[in-house]
Length: 330
Image 1 (cartoon, rainbow, N blue to C red):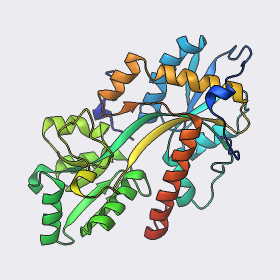
Image 2 (cartoon, one colour; image 1 turned 120 degrees about the vertical axis):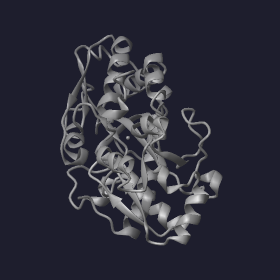
Image 3 (cartoon, one colour; image 1 turned 120 degrees about the horizontal axis):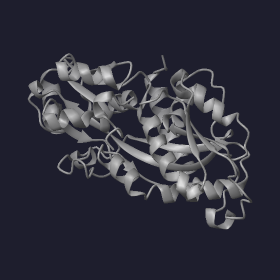
Image 4 (cartoon, one colour; image 1 turned 90 degrees about the horizontal axis):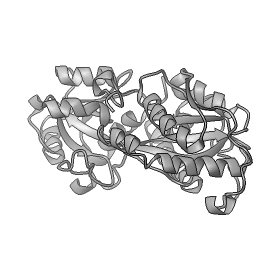
């Protein structure tokens, strides 16, 4: 979770079928839906990144759907509890989930017993937000770029520590991929959340950190940590001077955290199409775009077909990392 220091937003994917037809072809009459409040279920506590994203979209969706959109928090099990609740709800168009991609692409490979199946139990709606993973260092390390870090790691093998936001999470798996692809002999230290990891980096208890960009921004701007690279396909408009891992010769070192809207299996196609279209409109609302951009995140929209393709691609990529590393959720 992004820590409170980020003040993210306070200042500011599906039924698996053999083939999915485009939204335009399915945009049939959804009847009088919605004729009562719609719920967005968040599988994490209030105040975290998923919750704040959901509340931003809920505000923007209300006028589009001409109906009240409520946010309901159902935390537990690293997101599994709330996601399972959504996927076992009635497929009537009044319960959707705003969840992180890892609940669909990482957890099924790291938890031995999952109460839901991916993609069989999921109706994908859209990816709504993208967030790059950033590699940062404590200033005392004296490195200002990824090549400088790799040179230091060669001179001091086994002496550098790299923190992550949690065992078997996206930042932890990214650190493992980083170590494998670069050959850097660094110790990976998983924390119980981004907040304690950030705190220890600022205090110099850990020298390096992989995490979502938003909770790091206040400290980057304050000079208490140095951004070495973004594990992204392109630079962030928030930090335009920070190169990507691909620019340093590691094009396969990519890790993008994303958040999406999902519904239970069996959601009627007309309702799925209408809600997807509403999310597309909401993603263009200035308040949503600007508040996310201010924290290094991006408001976005994908078709259900694009989200399904992303789910499959990321799931296979992370499965390979999990199998190779043997990492499991705590």
